[in-house]
Length: 432
Image 1 (cartoon, rainbow, N blue to C red):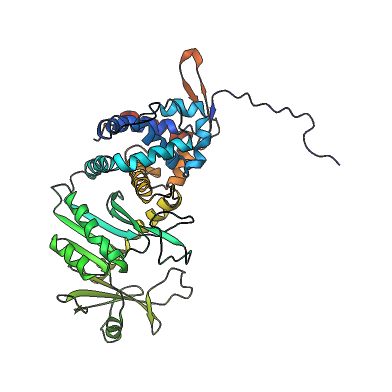
Image 2: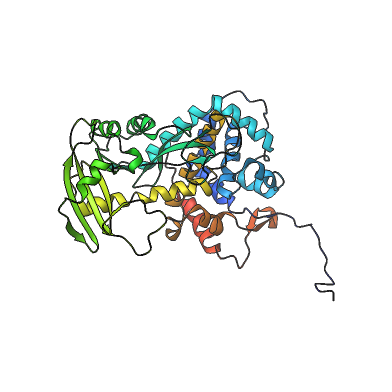
């Protein structure tokens, strides 16, 4: 028996419709911080296609990252969305091939100018604190083609696949991405961390008098620690539990510092290190259902984690301070999947590195947007939640009396948040 509507009329004559009404919020925010003008003033090189300026082309790469269209190929719907063009202030939207060609030229002639401008904005948004926290971490970007300088190395999810290795430094108080570098997959983290730290320290504003560095066991290296100490900074780094270090664990005197947590500390000089350092060991009972990410050393029904540090904190406070670094791992996961960091755009390494810098800029711009403009309950929201509440919003652009008006659905759950964000943007003073 036939089922379904019998008197159904289908038309495609909707005028002024878009699913990306939230791009108006992003564009207004970009206006308030002077994004397009700053890009035009600081990034200049010869263009073959004069239809889009350099600043408009950079924005054309930023908008898909924010809206969830990470791959260049998936930006095709934006080319045919006239309301999006109007709300974003663009004359149109480039084809995928045009974006790739621009990205290639940008990598050669504009990348360094963008990073310099981005550094100035990072320093301005950091403000004038007296303390900064650096959270170091790295990740693996799996490659599925024949991309230049992609190498087979440690890859926990796709063994045997070539990859790239981004190294990232986040500022622990603001969650801004303070510094980042891009490397072939077989690169040893210990060999690239010192140059990144040198650059990260060099960019710090003058009022900062104390820097604390947090990192996992991949950064347990005496050259990294000596670099941090040479900057008169402090650190809490997870120690790699080598055999000599494991042999010491059972003979230590542990003191109960919290429910289910015991701690001990001692002085120890690892092999080839110039001198002894303070080590703090945290012991906890093995959970009945250990998580899949539990990588601590287990012995006698306990798990052990050792931290090497020069901080004068009590063991419990040191452990809690280090655990706050977990936010950096969540940010990296968001960069890979929400901001499309894991979507390698081209076969050229230099161009992929330039795209990496644009992704970091997109992340920081959205972090500043949340901090300055979003309602309080959305200031710690993920990009996916921001899209649901603010950015990917269906709407119609109408012109009653010749006045452009964006009409949101009456039953949309994010209408109140949308209007509150509009008011915050209107009151925003340019931070740069």
